[in-house]
Figure (cartoon, rainbow, N blue to C red):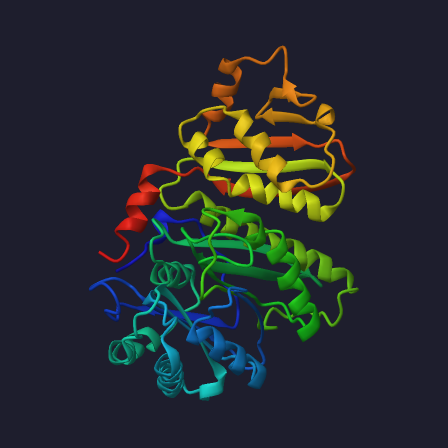
Length: 408
């Protein structure tokens, strides 16, 4: 299966990263389902994982291998999550790493596994091992290889997801490019998503971790499709140091901020692609909460609105049912709330002024705002100066169909 450049935006190659993909028959025949990122010696990788207490075998093994060595091979399979599979699942993940390492010419601890797909099914180890030579035979670093890998890691996604940024450091062109998968079971801390981002900048271990944490907080931790988190989620950031710029050793290096902006931009592009591809989604909602008492309150209210099934189903219908939004906000607020200070905008339309419908608001104005493909919703609480935001999507009939038939 080829994913041609005519169908996708150009991506910036990352020096020191090569990718491969293959159809191993892990879940569906003749579909790319196995991908690998090969990193040149000297590359560093930081990673974040799901906070769901039910963590898949590859998550446990990935943590273990990341503590032992700098990764040279990131191995990703789709179709089967290898989660809730006990000791045999962990041994299957180990065996997959050993087999991939042998083909790639690295050590087993330098191979880090990632899986996504159906929970509770055993990893088809024989098929995976049989697909390794095709996956690792002649990996490349061109844009086509990134798109093929993005295709291989998707599950219910309707399209592959990839993004790039470039930035100048010390007169050198530095690239940041990444791929992701995700469509359902999406919510902060993390979601059913995998994302693999690389840069050819040279970055020391601590600033690399700081780059990933900060960028994730402003991207994957601010999206919600259905309020569900999963067992396998992971985001990685690898730095190969092949661009030629001097290493970034500390977060106080002025170049850190420049690189951080590029990394955050890539992760936000990927996060937005995930939520707009939410299972059955037809609209993107940007929830902005302003005037909160503190950051935690702002986050809590934004999340409460973003994950409300009533808000999301109204959005699917294009229904400006602002009462559902206020109700979701009220459920997330604690203590005495001065509702006479609360305003709510649907797009440009001021629907609520001082906790009640604005006298000049019309249903037609609200319907027009909610009919757009992208709907900004802004809630002003009048309690302080803190603010927060989230991306979410509507909840459609198709969401139920996709998840009811997921294992069919």
